[in-house]
Length: 100
Figure (tube, helix red, strand yellow):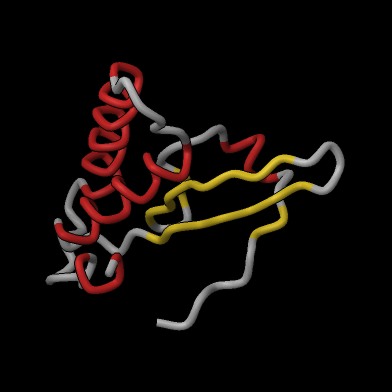
């Protein structure tokens, strides 16, 4: 369902990183006020879907670290993480890409 909803439209490259960061910031602020669970996976799926619907080539990434165990979801646009700490993301082993 996410793939269907996230079907990309024409890619808009002008100010796309800035737009992506702005959307990520809005989602982070809304998630802080959300009464339910809105952690990295929920925020990343939301960000991914919105950016793809905007026509941006966002990529949903999942990764984990063995010891101490931690897992994280984030979104990248042109190889730049939009949500999450880039230093922490570098320590994670990314999961293999899923076929489209």
